[in-house]
Length: 486
Image: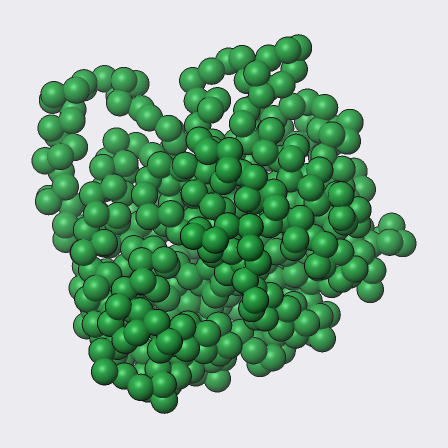
């Protein structure tokens, strides 16, 4: 094995041989997410709430055991058995520093990350370290653990300074590790500085997109201590838009860099435009969406990496008797996307490796202590559509529609005047994200934590052990397809 690097449009080893990375995202681990782990709101909120209910010591014990059991050698062995060769590890900056004590590295910051990177290496699995949560929040999504819909990372330079500091620390620690494929320095940035402007791009004296300035600083910081590893750079607006990036990246402005798209298909989620049957028209739509995302890089001969993609899956308890038929349709979407990627020799990382049953390659068994404890709560949370990801708001849409109608009647009925950044959030999406998945979910956080009331360490560890590989169920249909294409 050897260091990987970018050569033109390809990822290659030190001998110049092409390496196609095929793997999955390890989300919900060092960056917990509500739909993955079953809680409402954001990770920092449930950590605070649990400490209030059972005390800081016991809460810290539970979360540490969760990290210990979520990914073990058994997971790496299974992953390797499918022929997959790369895991993208989502991390939260809060594991490394504290908002109340910034730029001071925590004593146990690398304990679990070191362990999993080492385990993966034993099974010939490359890893990509993905900064899923940056100080202040790099997007308005729950998955950056900021708790709001505005991305303050872009407004406050100190947040940016802290991220530069942190990546210098991480890169220096792993600079000699050849099993690390590279560093995904910001997951799904959503920088509003270029919204509605035509003078952004950093060429001919025009003002640069703030994201470009941050990338310049991050690349310089990493390269000051590590000249070997690939740097993976997401496009703006949730890794979909590269049009305001500077043209001189093709001349090496960001050395040894690959550009990350996220290629989720609308056909893989609830309420698609039509049931996916794999018609030529539907396949063309899938391909066009994918081609549009990578067009900017292709025009400049740059390397593309698909950092996230994949459908969500129906569940018998929530989605009715036809759940298996729904999932067969969604696996057809997976197969057709993989066929496109195969033809392009595209490196990819499907989202997601493990969760409680919505999207993972493996998911926690219904017979575990954790699922039994939260079964009623999870059913309510699903019905209330308290999570944004893959939601089905059938049961609560009527409650939020009056707010949408009020904005249209009292502000404007012109859709163009009601567009705010990010543009992929419609009026309906913005209203329900803020009122349903932030405000309403916030009121459910204490209820989640109250489930732990009175528990001792033995019970807490039993809950954490629910996430061990031997207590999980394999999503056989998905894994069969991944094995075929790996």
